[in-house]
Amino acid sequence: MKIKKGDQVKIIRGKDRGKSGRVLQLVPRDAKTLVVVEGLNLCYKHLRPKKDREKGQRIMFPAPFDLSNVMLVCPKCGKPARIGFKILTDKSELNREKKQRICKKCTVAI
Image 1 (cartoon, rainbow, N blue to C red):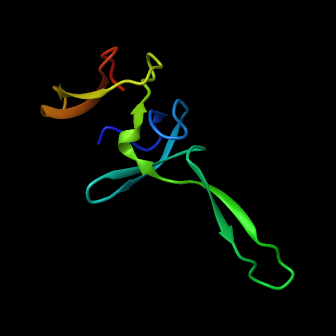
Image 2: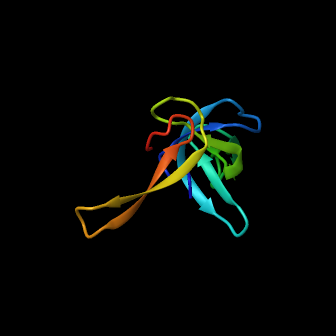
C-alpha cells in the first residue's frame, strides 16, 4: 500500500478539497480501502441523554473516505506527488532486498 498511518496527505476530491492533514487510520475493505484523516471530513453523531436531567450531545468525529481521494505530500518538495517503489539491495546483510517508496516528482526516498 502506498499510503501509511502518519503520512501527510492532501485531499483532491470532495468537500475538503485542497486541505491537508495526517492519516490517523486505514480501514481495509474488500474492493476499496478507506482512510481517516485528522481534522477533515468531519461528521456529527447525535447521542441521546442516558439519564434524567442529562442533556443530549453532538459529537464531531472524522469520518473515513476512499483512499483514491487523497495524494501523499512529499516531505522533500512539499507538493502532492505520485508514489513509486524502488527495490534496494542491502549488501551488508546477506543480500536482502528492501522496498522503498519514492516521489515521482523529485525522485527522493520517502
